[in-house]
Figure 1 (cartoon, rainbow, N blue to C red):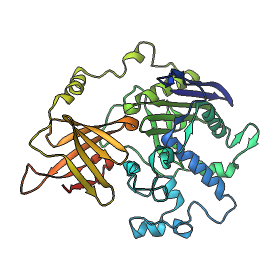
Figure 2: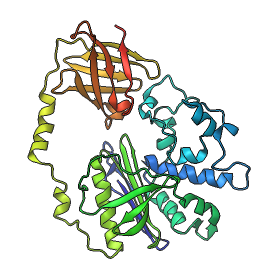
Figure 3: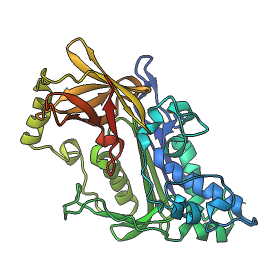
Length: 375
């Protein structure tokens, strides 16, 4: 993991923890690079706003006037702007998993790890992110140099979207203190922590998790990144909250005791997790074969020994049976070990034992792609 803290223009902490190579035991340090995922959004937005200064193009200029790009509808083609794209207002599906398809090139879509664009473009370190936080907390200035004009910084702070929450239920937060972040600017979420105004953003891509939070009034900035999984954003919120409490002179609710067992999983949850892999897949169904989708291309289901494996482009997933005979969970292998997907097979109307398709809800929640079996 990497952690850095700035306060009142000074770097008070910048450090790496753990190993960046388990085989050689080479330790991570303040210069070790981590994928910062969606924290990249603010870098892209800031760069574009700076470039547009003194040009005839503005954030509200329709894209069609200067970019040759086609969207799924005439309305988007005619009206979508750079501001819409930078603030997530287009309504377009993410289709993140398309990057695993080797048939797409850099010219049409981002591809594999070294060439990925969008949320995966920037790798950064604890040291580098201290400069980024100081730049923002000092309103566009860094080490006495004006990097961005005040009016352009004001453009960056303007509220442009209201993402809200994805949940339709009233639920208690995972941690005792609530942090709101329901207003969206250009690459930043605006909200409050303990009543203090904050600018924040989470980053998540396969294998990397990150968070950055700025307290503009207190001139406090916190950056944290890790490898691995951070379900429910628990690690990131705990570390950020504890450090923020220390500098805000608030009594931290987290301590040496609660840090070891929070949030504790119930015995029932642990039981369900431990027994999930004990289900055998139903041998009556012939899952093995080739499947295709017009947009997503081809995927393959293979039988390796006594286990099923899904292959899509660069990726391979072990298929783990569930209580539902036609549903599997997929665990990524190799470079994509952190990926988890859901796999649901379909049968024909004439023969309920004949597999004719497979749906991957993880590839698109609102419109999951369906791959038709060809053999």
